[in-house]
Image (cartoon, rainbow, N blue to C red):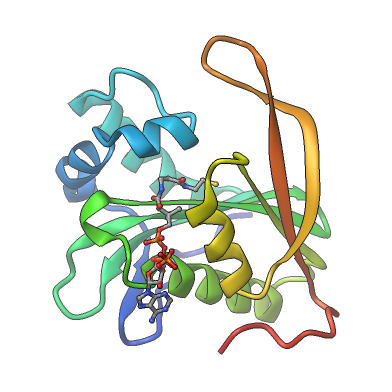
Length: 184
Ligand SMILES: CC(C)(COP(=O)(O)OP(=O)(O)OC[C@H]1O[C@@H](n2cnc3c(N)ncnc32)[C@H](O)[C@@H]1OP(=O)(O)O)[C@@H](O)C(=O)NCCC(=O)NCCS
C-alpha cells in the first residue's frame, strides 16, 4: 500500500516528493559528469529522461518499496539533489543520493541522509540501512560516516561499470541498535 508523500526538514534542507516542475533543474544537475560517473543514470540525459525521472520518483509513493525525495533548500525552495530509499527486504533498505554541482561542499547530503535515517527508524520496522559507493567516491563515503554509518568493507565485483566490467563497491551500514550514537 502506498502513502501520501511526506515532508522532512531540519530547517536548512527540506525533503519533499518530486514534482513535474523539478524536471528542468534535474536536467541541469544530471549533465554533471560526477553524477554520471558514480550513479547509473542514462547517458545522454535528456529533457525526456528528466521528466520520466521526476514522474517515476513521485509514483514511488504509490507502492511499498521505494521512497524518494527531492532535496531542496529550506529557505529558497531551490532543488539541490535527490535521495531515495529502496526497500530490499522487510528489515533492510538501501539508500542512494546525488547533489547538483551547485549544492556540494556545505553538508546538504549529510543532512538529507540524517533526515531519511531518523525517519526510517522512527516510522518503519527497518533494522538495517545500507549504502554502497565506488571506491574512488570519497565524498560519498564521508557523507555516510558523518551520518553515523559504519564502513563494513569492500564487495568485489558487486557492480558492473558502463562497459560491463565488474567493479568493487565499499559498503556502509547503520543498524537500528548500533551502539554508536548517530550524528547530531
Ligand atoms: C556524494 C555527494 C552527494 C557528496 O556531496 P558533498 O557536498 O560532499 O556532501 P555534503 O553535502 O554532506 O557536504 C560535505 C562537505 O561539505 C562540508 N561541510 C560544510 N558544512 C558542513 C556541515 N554543516 N555539515 C557537514 N559537512 C559540511 C564538509 O566539510 C564536507 O566537505 P569534505 O567532503 O571536503 O569534507 C556529491 O559529491 C555528489 O553528488 N556526487 C555525485 C553523485 C554521487 O556520487 N552520489 C553518491 C553515489 S554512492
